[in-house]
Image 1 (cartoon, one colour):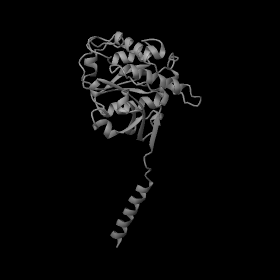
Image 2 (image 1 turned 90 degrees about the vertical axis):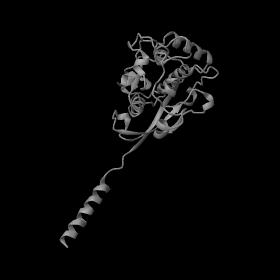
Image 3 (image 1 turned 45 degrees about the vertical axis):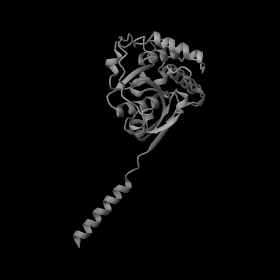
Image 4 (image 1 turned 45 degrees about the horizontal axis):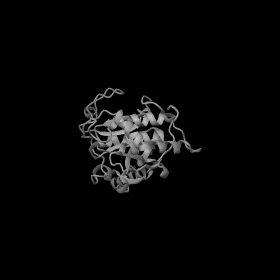
Length: 260
């Protein structure tokens, strides 16, 4: 009878302990602005230029909101020099600048990651050396996914995503996570999914939520692939890196540098 009582007490203690364990919190955050998006069409080589416009438009509109919380990273950034635009003419100028400041072979259309980063800094903050955005690469999907969430949370600014083995540009503006709130700076969370926008109009992916599983294992046009482009062979004057070596088979993002 004593053994039965002890066993019952132990079971009750376990159940009480389980009941006292708090349920992990889920946090949603999104900096998307519907009027900020520039689709690259009709130029099918201008995904990075269109995303540069969309990202800078998003930053401008969010920073102009009187109730927007300015993060420490944002406060340390130079003053934004960008004026919002959705014009094709501006996209063409941006692409031209990217191609003259990239490290990819000029015979390849479009721009590489360095050109995209340089255009964001030049048009956004007035200098190729502004250092606000940087190209970052990670060995695993999980590292890149968590970094994407962390950068958005700490800056209120979108993150560029290199998809389709690095041949296409998109942007992430939001997330869902379970665990700690990323806006506190904590990395103790699990990524549930992200909000993505693709610059190709016909794909109809604008502020679309993709679960973690879809982003990691989904269809080719959705999945975040490791980088496998071979054209970025010129040494970058900004960070001294050669893209094909720096990014090869890694998960690449273009994100605010001050979070590092």
